[in-house]
Length: 171
Image 1 (cartoon, rainbow, N blue to C red):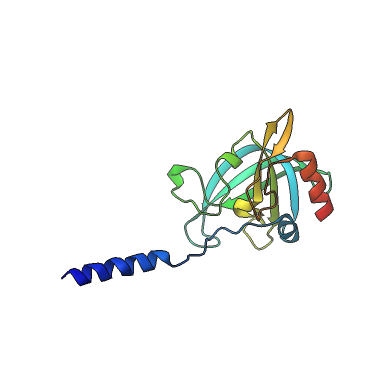
Image 2: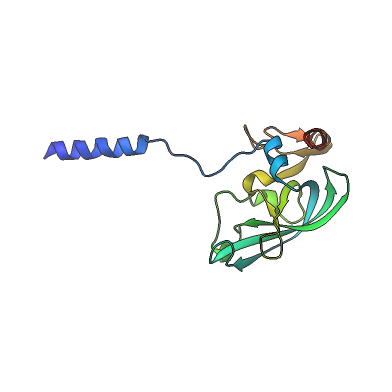
């Protein structure tokens, strides 16, 4: 009787020890620059969600209306960008790869990477998930991009002026 319990516990421990791959992909600056249409320093001026059947039935998208300046060209930016998932509890639809709530608050400044997707409904400017939005905060009297760790475009906190220079160099 005792052996089956020990065997079951050992089997359970072995299953838990099997490595699992994470769904979130960190993307370096050069990787993001290769797959995105634009990168901008923006202020998030509005945030809404909507239900859609693209790319699958019953998904929820978040639309961020942003205004700012392209870090690639210096041109003014006023556009809508979209990511799959919602932070609104009533939508009951989140994804592990969507940008964080703190990074996407109305009134917040951010560096946003997006891809113009002509195959999507309305030809959306889609944000590259968690790796596509970087919150900007004031630090020591100047704006700082908040880094996201090893493997991301901005792994460490970095001055906006330095982030702009890195984007221009990678462009």
